Amino acid sequence: MQNQGLFEEQQEMPTPMGFFSTFPPNNITSCPPLGCHQSLKAFNIAAPHHHHALPTETLLSSLSSPKHREHLASDFGGPRLLSLQRSSANLCKKNGVDDHLGVSAMKMKRIKARRKVREPRFCFKTMSEVDVLDDGYKWRKYGQKVVKNTQHPRSYYRCTQDNCRVKKRVERLAEDPRMVITTYEGRHVHSPSHDLDDSQPSDSQLNNFFW
DNA sequence: CGTTTTTGACCGGCGC
DNA sequence: GCGCCGGTCAAAAACG
Image 1 (tube, rainbow, N blue to C red):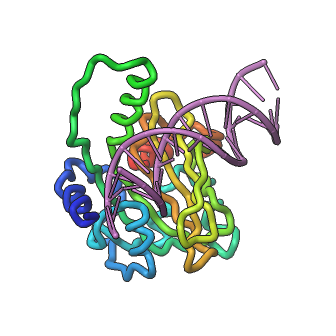
Image 2: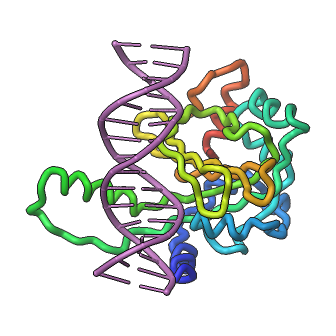
Image 3: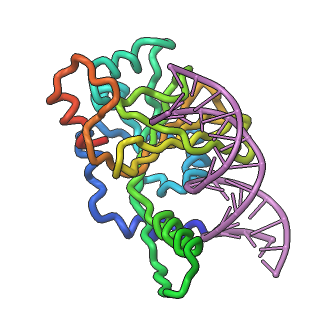
């Protein structure tokens, strides 16, 4: 069942520290899921004990530039970070080998293979009126889906940078539409390219390491 | 006219 | 095996 999947996910936890080394452990406190459990299941995201709450400042400081932080923190009464958690990949375990395939079949196979690979994920909730938070990267929407038992659609985005396969998805919490859940998957292989402002490059670069 | 969004189709995984 | 569901594709539309 799903438990099985989650278990495997936890076992395949090779180098998940990338995301969280930016967040000192002493800043992490345990957090009541606050209805998040369902969401996590929907996201196919790992077990509750990978689930942490962080001070708002921690998230804000992890954004790519002061400008973005300001953007996040300022309007709408200040989006409040409610929770944050990560998960790692569940890896492909099946490897069929069949050579005589049509072109489209091969194409499909490649897609499937790619689909199997789950990059490390990490998601957080914020209180925000805008769905897509400006994190300094440029995203292209590639899908939208209505998920069961929710009135708000989930949107799927991919990083526009070549060779960068980072994805994120955005949805509003069914229980409280004022809250936005953003889930990142994968790691950028580049610096935040979008709208390079007057922030210190070192700052952006540093944070890029974690995003 | 290049890029992004929209949106229905399609696919695989999972439960029954 | 079938149907449901989430995630992705890709053609067409919209956008700047």
